[in-house]
Structures are given as structure tokens and as C-alpha cells.
Length: 210
Image (cartoon, rainbow, N blue to C red; front, side, top):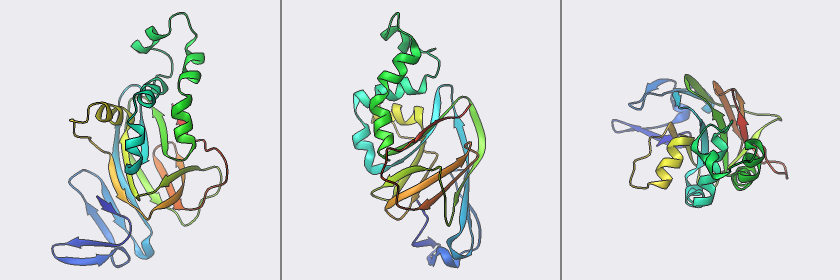
């Protein structure tokens, strides 16, 4: 688990993040850059398959997401063009109509700020996650009731929730202060966040990135 606030222990020494300045490479293959005054960014490698995506979710919401109907809806969400075997569940129906209708539950789940999904196809690239002092609209909005941010590919998330005996291969984990966060992105190359109260509305937390 990575800490964005609090203290970090290195070989017996406890340091606050404000004390740190430099770079730390981790065994998982991503790098944290600690800068003064808690301004920092993290680089990581994202590897997504066909009909896949990047998911941000609080670990506390995994129990709620582990629902057959929601996972099925998420499978349909990942199929942009109706090229998977899921089309056989809806013979003689237009896939765009099916997809809009059958993903209503997962869109509502995301629209409540419980998850952010970037839909991707065959992506392997270095990405950056950056803390910002302030973000303005348009934003996605993510609620972290436990503060345990999980970043994982959509395909891995679905598979490991459906088969809990599997060990989930996460993109990264980050421990943040619990609460609401504004999220902005430039593709998936650079994703920025800041702690901020959201507007009183339904959130647009699903984005297709070609």
C-alpha cells in the first residue's frame, strides 16, 4: 500500500512525506516522486487488453460491486462494438441499443461517484498520476470512504470478483485521506486529482478513450 499522506518507514526511519524529496522505485514497477509541500506524482505502467479499461475505486465499494448483475453490465460496457460472445444473448437487437439499456446499473453505480472507468483498447504505456492543488470543471468525481484507492484494469477486476480465489493484479494502490476527490485526465497518460467537495449532480464517470 502506498501512502500519500502520513508517514513512511524506510529501514527503521519514519519520515513524513513533507520531509522527503527525491525518487523511490518500487518492486511493482512504478515510481513515486516526493516533492516538498506534499506535491508529488507517481509513474506507472498501464497494460490493457482488447475490450478493457482502467478503473479507480475505493476498496470499500468492492463488496457492493461484487454482484452478478453489475459485473454482467460491466462486461457489456467494455464491448464497444458488439464483437464478443455477449451478442448472442440479444439476438436480432441493435448492439448500441442493447449496450445503453443493459449498462444502466453500472452507469448509475459510477454516476454516484463510486467508480471511475476509462474504456480502452490494447493500451501499453507509461502513465502519470499527479496531485493538484486545485481542479476546475469538467471533472470526474470519486468518493473514497475508506481512503484506499485501488487502480486496476477492468478485465482484472471483473475476473477477480467473479473468481475470488484469484489474486488481483493491481495497477497500484494508494492510501489517501477519506472523502471526495475531483479527477481530471489527459487521455490516460496523465491523471490529476485533488480533494474537493462535488457538485450536487449525477457524475459522468465513464469515458471512452480511442
